Amino acid sequence: MRTQSREVRCTTCNILLAKVEENGLVIQRGELQATIHGEFHAALVCYRPRCRKLNVLRLSTVTKPAVATA
Ligand SMILES: [Zn+2]
Image (cartoon, rainbow, N blue to C red):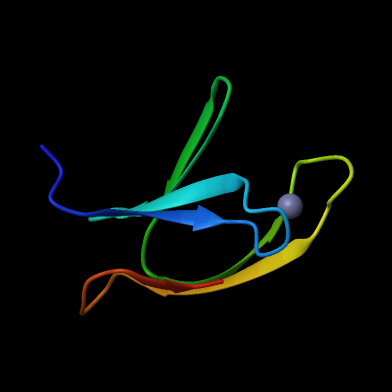
């Protein structure tokens, strides 16, 4: 049971790019699943062909609950 999860959406077209959960940033595309935790910057290019917007996240899951800024 998850207590907290937050969606990360493209700032331009609002499509779902990833989720931020207790254990980190979770990206799931088809068979690929990645969970990233720690303190980092992530650059996600929107996968929608007509958008392709670069979304930059600053995320820390080390000392406090995950906070993402898109
Ligand atoms: Zn987009």
